Length: 113
Image 1 (cartoon, one colour):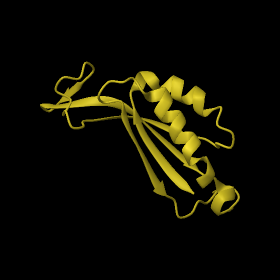
Image 2: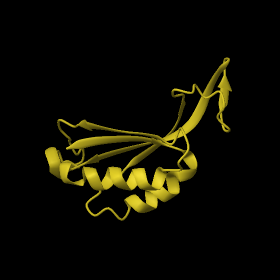
Image 3: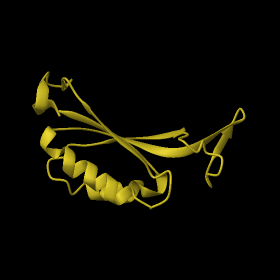
Image 4: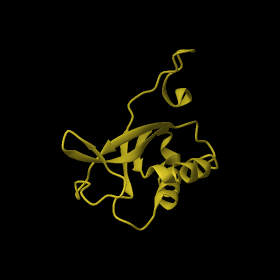
């Protein structure tokens, strides 16, 4: 199992979500509104948030837990649909997931995803 974490521009969320619905075998995703900064430290970002003298850029965080064989389809879909060609498009991270447990049934492992 893998844990995919993607940070994308908020206006790209609908495109990414619609495209991910077409990935056969994807069981779901979680979306969070987040803010932060990258290498440019948000100084010139058009949609920045200023809090306590620190500039942040709004992003959307997508989390997906999936079977190993779906990873390439998912990341290529996110990358294609979130791309604008401008700096700050976001990042995708992939980590191993040791186990999953479905609370309702107690199922563990791949079947719980």
